[in-house]
Image 1 (cartoon, rainbow, N blue to C red):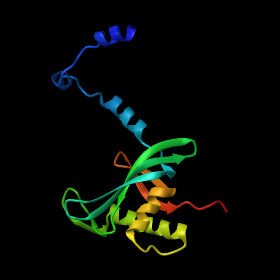
Image 2 (cartoon, rainbow, N blue to C red; image 1 turned 45 degrees about the horizontal axis):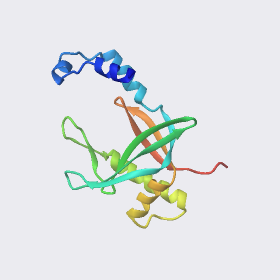
Image 3 (cartoon, rainbow, N blue to C red; image 1 turned 90 degrees about the vertical axis):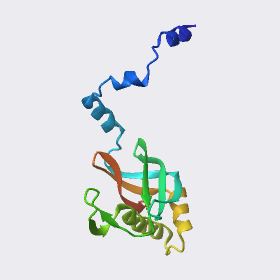
Image 4 (cartoon, rainbow, N blue to C red; image 1 turned 135 degrees about the vertical axis):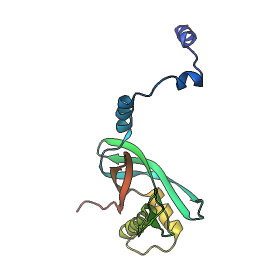
Length: 160
């Protein structure tokens, strides 16, 4: 009965009500920063779910999303890679920066991680997707432009 009374007391709001309420930037920054994973080397907690699509330029993009752990801390993160190499482009000017973009770099690191973990050369793209989906890998996570970014991908190696 108490739940019914509480629900009846909740005021319904419209989208117009939200337009009239201002955003507290300081509070937003607290919330935003609390959602970021701390900088460090996290380990994926499989399965790491892949999505495979072509982007608007018809480039093959493989995206992964899943759980990661760092000691007792847990979180979620995603990253993408592409086996179709492209250079980074300045978002404001469109200028070719003459260096590989993040999706290309992630692909190279993912292939190296696969080869280090399996002791053999990668034979096809399916093996790479299955490896990243089903086996733990290390992700070096840092903050870039106010968001988490996977800066490196490497094999999990047993302690020496």
